[in-house]
Image 1 (cartoon, rainbow, N blue to C red):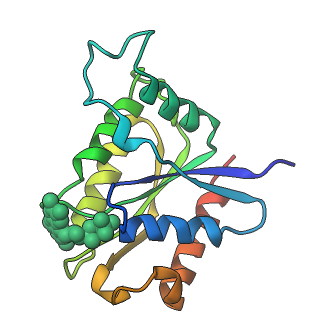
Image 2: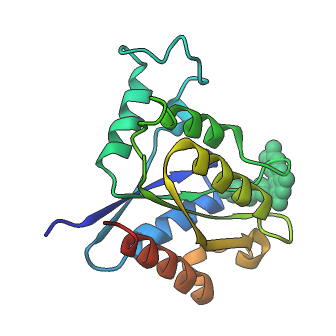
Length: 180
Ligand SMILES: Cc1cc2nc3c(=O)[nH]c(=O)nc-3n(C[C@H](O)[C@H](O)[C@H](O)COP(=O)(O)O)c2cc1C
């Protein structure tokens, strides 16, 4: 049997992103039978524009939709910007929400986790990402949550925090169990 493929979308483009590191942790600690892929192309997407969303959509859009089509589930790992979803991630949600009613993540399970500087770890952004993706087509698994203040890591990679590592592994395992 082939592995369950989990596509991971990261809401920060920063090279030293804590959320990117959490995504790496999800990939390296995925249980047997689950492959987690961290998507690299969100920064290449143009701003959503219905005039561009044609049969001949821009290459970065085609690539994102192809990766989403191949995935069995999606994991979103994002910080919070100004109390909400970072623009780069919201833009990806909008591209993935089309074609209307038939986006590439339609009905696939999706979980949202992440880290931000504030004491609540970006929970507003995480709640709003769940709301927006819930409208865009995937099946958001509301019970799978993790919002960690980035101060928890004290500048170290999240893999060095055993509690957070266990929580990330748990989310990925439970997300994979939602497939099929
Ligand atoms: C434009 C901007 C807005 C931010 N707004 C918030 C915020 O509303 N709440 C919060 O907790 N942190 C906020 N932060 C701090 C981020 O949570 C912090 O920089 C975080 O580490 C970014 O994630 P990353 O390490 O994955 O890049 C903001 C950072 C930036 C650059």
